[in-house]
Amino acid sequence: MTTAAPARVAPARATTRVLRRPEVGAAVAALAVLLFFTVVADQFLTPSGIGTWLNSASRFGIMAVAVAMLMIGGEFDLSAGAMTGATGLLVGVATTGYGLNVWVAVVLALVVALAIGALNGVLVVRTGLPSFIVTLGTFFVLQGIDLALVKLVYGQVAVQGFSDVPFVESVKPVFGGTLAIGGASISVSVLWFLAVTALATLVLLRTRAGNWVFAVGGAQASARATGVPVARTKIGLFMTTAAAGWLVGMISLFQSSTVQSSTGVGDEFIYIICAVVGGCLLTGGYGSAVGAALGALIYGMTRQGVVYAGWDSNWLYAFLGVMLLAAVLVNNAVRVRAERLR
Image (cartoon, rainbow, N blue to C red; front, side, top):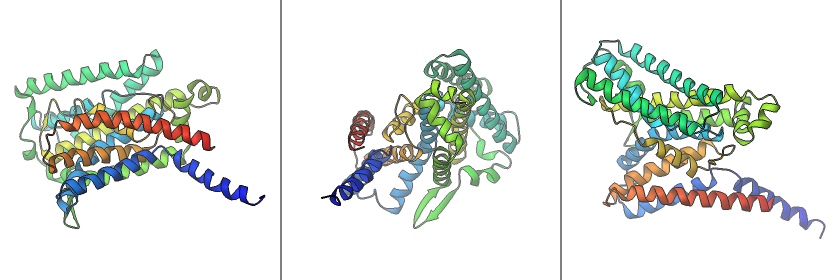
């Protein structure tokens, strides 16, 4: 009798540790989506099919991971989608419209993105306004500039002729290159996606800065009282999201050699959905980069799986709504179950 109790406690504790991981629900859902579309769509698991949905998931995944870190820190960024388009447009207009060197334009776009991210962070920290309101304002500003700037230079809402810019081929392998792996054409964006996810996971789980992110999202007042640099942490998170927006903007630009004023608009909600599906709480203090990456993978697989299955693509939005609600309910149930087993 005395030796049986520890044997029962050990598996219970192991189960609790697994259930308390934010990405558990997303991992199960990703496997279910993979199996489902493998059955209903013959092309889904072919090398070309895998390459297509991985490439799609990677761009959303890069942003979803950055947005997840910001959400763990207790904030939102509704300008994230517009940022991807704005940085791409800045490079496109600067090179094709004003003859700026493409490498200089890429670096300039990064500097501008970081400055906008820092401004968002400073406004949130200094004014105490909800980040929802601050970044919604930034979203409209960026969208307006995207439309007005391109129309001013070209008289239309798209940048043309980017592929003819000098030295563009020297930058393209970095952001828009492809690799042939096992018969599949894999975009270099997938490598960026994996690198961003790994780096974010390392920062969140193995560094002091990661502890600060969880602290300011879970209990900001307590974090400040214990010496956590709340303002610096939040500003850094907004700059991280902006940098991710720049990266996705460069990937989109150099993959397609064109960019429109509407690029990225509306995608900010998909990033948030991916983060929530990956286990992030809307109230902050809980989540993971791996979970957000899995959420983006689910979206990428579903987006392409619907096409391969021959369904109306509009069903994708219905699926996103169901997926968001289901993720919130499942994540809540898993946490309650984990607390009971503690």
